[in-house]
Length: 105
Length: 128
Image (cartoon, rainbow over all chains, first blue to last red; front, side, top):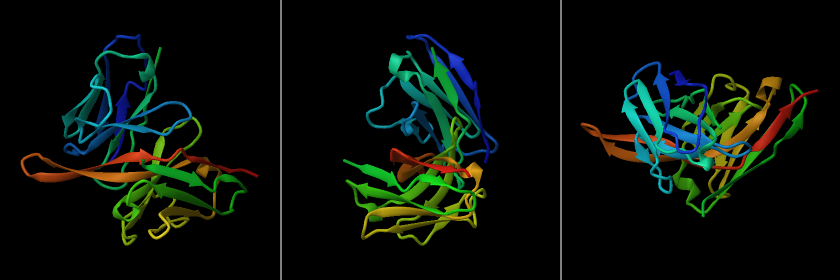
């Protein structure tokens, strides 16, 4: 299963609403997770089951979608949110990742 | 506190071998499935391998199949990745990650997965 993400990068300002899209090459129900990665650090889980927020993750992050089209939304971008975001399909192995979306200032 | 600590990375020549380790603590290691994920310099994440909690079910990415071997020692709370016939394209930071499962209702009860804890990574460089 292949994943595409759009855009590949975006520039935004603090307080902006940011939306990242992930599309799967075939239907994966709600079997999708989102991760945030900052330079030199391991990925951090944000959302699983397409829309369930991981414990401790701020509520400004939300996920939606089912089937082939998914969205990660940051309702009000904060300085600590500048990072690269990856989606991952967990419908079947290999658990492929999307190519990433870099969010910068 | 859950901790995953990788070790064993380094510089190796093409065709060489390396064994990575991941030491787990803060949870019942024998109850969790584990994975290796890698990231080439400046590139995205690539899933590499999976092992079930008992070690009986194993999967590999096509890119490493036949060259890499995943294993675990539940008595030692450790995960391993034996890497043979290394190539330049295997150069990457290698992460171990714990797989968690989640049951949810969507017309019927389903189970999904996610990687909830990751190690800090260990760098493998394949170069002459």
